[in-house]
Each structure stands twice: as structure tokens, then as C-alpha cells.
Image (tube, rainbow, N blue to C red; front, side, top):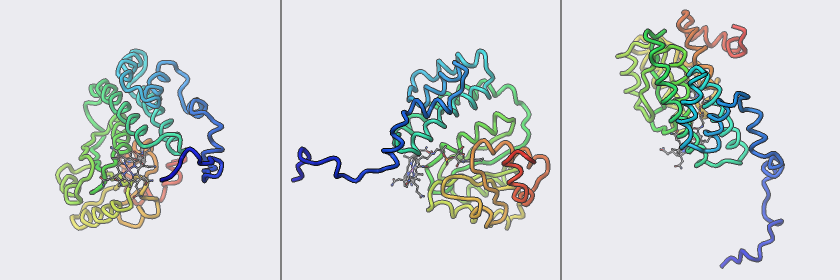
Length: 262
Ligand code: B12
């Protein structure tokens, strides 16, 4: 049996990244990301400090003096940004991410409700999904809210969606754009299959692909694929697609678009 009482902690493998970064407290890291406005900061704090019980009340309070878009972008999403940063640094673990995302989703539902009446006619329809076999949908959900809050109509198919169901939904809804999210190396291969089947049906629309499993090089290796790194890039890509940019132009001008030059 191992005798933990006599273990010399100094002789145990040390992760130097965590040791060095531990000098910075989560509050200090958060302060760099959080908004200054006290009401929006409260909303963001509810997300990253995992206070899901308070989020609805605080979102309602913030909506009295801020637009739903502001509450989403500068409140809820800032809270999620802090969570991602803490997770990336090894300070937060998976359960923290899950609880924070749950708090964010609760707040999003309320803020989205306040948005709905503002956009009766949408700028265009977008079909969204998380790849076949992939249960990771937090990023897709954020992207969907940002697209909706920018006036686009979203048909959200959900997560773990069969390649054939994505293709059928595109045929049925005739969107101006389709998106896919893949966080697992085992699921990203669904994207070229979707592209191939869409091409066979003569469909030629931008297919925005995102998620930690893919990168720009991979996404540009199949027809229609256009890479997105962050949810906040969705509305910019969709706006250009509505203006008539096809997937080839979105690829060519990608750097300018992302740096705000296009
Ligand atoms: C949360 C999480 C889960 C949750 C998912 C909950 C949910 N509803 O999404 C749960 C617990 C279910 C889960 C399960 C698993 N997970 Co997991 N999970 C994660 C974790 C910690 C965070 C993912 C996340 O939500 N990030 C935050 C969001 C905001 O990021 P995002 O989705 O990438 O979105 C950003 C961009 O990609 C972009 N974006 C995304 N979509 C879109 C769409 C558009 C249009 C646009 C413009 C932008 C955009 O915008 C966002 C940023 O602004 C990651 C670790 C990591 N570092 O990513 C592992 C991770 C993805 N999981 C992993 C694994 C392996 C699993 C499991 C297989 C574990 C297991 N052995 O059981 C299972 C899946 C089992 C199954 N097949 O069902 C691996 C994948 C490894 C790989 N390369 O294949 C990771 C990387 C962990 C690791 N380091 O090993 N997981």
C-alpha cells in the first residue's frame, strides 16, 4: 500500500506552467477581460464565478439600461471568455466550464427573448450544426446567438447531426450559408463528406467550419469550406455572404476580413 503521509511533495513532478502562472490570481486575470460597466460586470461575474442562480435576475436588471446585444456581448460572453482563459491555464477544470456554460445559456435565453421582436425579417437563413458524433455545442450555441442578434435567421439542427441530415436540412431550408462545429479529431471528417454531397446536389454556398479540431488549412482542403476561429467572426462572414461574396472570395479575403480591413 502507498503511504501518502510520508510523500515528499517537493519530489513530485511539478507542472512549471501552473507554478509560474499561479502567481496571478483568477481575479487579476478576470479583471483584464471583464467590462467596466457595473451591471454588465455583474452578469459576467455570475458566469465565471459559477453563480447560475443569480444570472437571470442580473440579466433582467442589465436589460433595463442596456440592449440585449450589449448584455450578450459585453456581459455573458465576457464571463465565458474568463472561464475559457482560466480553463486554458489549468486553473479551472471541465466541471467549471460546464457550470459556467449553463449559467451563460440561462442568461442567453432571457436576452434572446428581448431580441426577438426587433428582427421580424431576417437578413438570410443559416443552417447550423455540430458534427456527427460530436457532443460539443457550446461554441455553436454562442455563434448562433451572435448571428441571431445580428438579424440572421438560424436553423439550429443541434449536436451530433448525421451528415445526411445536414445535407437534407440545407436542401429543405435553402440557406445562404451552412455552418459546422467539430471539437474532436474523430468527427471533423464529417465536413468534407457534407461538402462533397452538397456539391453533388449542385449546392454552392459558404460552409463555415469551426471548432478546436479544425484549422484553416484543413477547412480549405474541401470545396465551400471557410474557416472561423471565433464565434464573433460569424456575423462578419454572414454579412459578406449576403453582399454576394462566394466561398472562394471569403477565402481569398479572409485575412483582410479578420483584421477588419475588408
Ligand atoms: C466542455 C467539453 C465537453 C463537454 C461538452 C458539453 C457541450 N454541451 O458542449 C462534455 C462533458 C459533454 C464533453 C465530452 C467529451 N469530450 Co470534451 N471537452 C470540453 C472542453 C473542456 C471545452 C469545449 C468548449 O466548450 N469550449 C468552449 C467553446 C466556446 O469553444 P468552441 O466550441 O471551440 O467554440 C469556439 C470556436 O471554435 C468558435 N466556433 C464554434 N462553433 C462555431 C460556429 C460558427 C458559425 C462560428 C463563426 C464560430 C464557431 O467560436 C467559439 C469561440 O468564440 C474541451 C477542451 C478544450 N480545450 O476545448 C474538451 C474536448 C473538446 N473534449 C474532448 C473529448 C475527448 C471528449 C470526450 C470524448 C471525453 C470522453 N473520453 O468521454 C467526450 C465526448 C464523448 C462523446 N462522443 O459523446 C477532447 C477532444 C480531443 C480531440 N481532439 O478529439 C477535448 C479537446 C479535451 C482534451 N484536451 O482532450 N466535453
